[in-house]
Image 1 (spheres, rainbow, N blue to C red):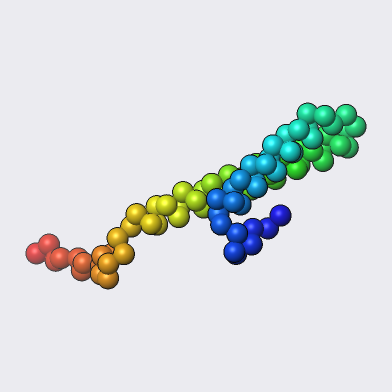
Image 2: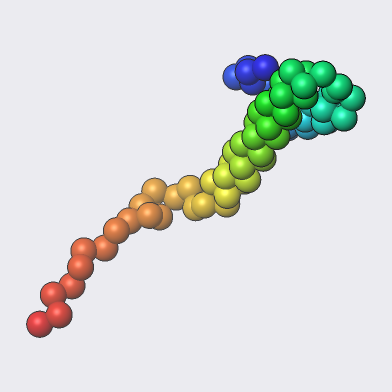
Length: 82
């Protein structure tokens, strides 16, 4: 399930967490070897999606903490040591 641009990140994280839980349950109850393989694939995909969204949320929080002023990230020229 792709996150829509209008869907808040927090809602996408909740949905991804539910998807991960569902994938874990499917793995727990899988019996057929092919079903086990498919559930492992789905479990890994759901986990990776959840972790990606958490990373995006953390990076977004970090970006919000950076100064927003003009010139706040100005690079000063290197000084001649002589």
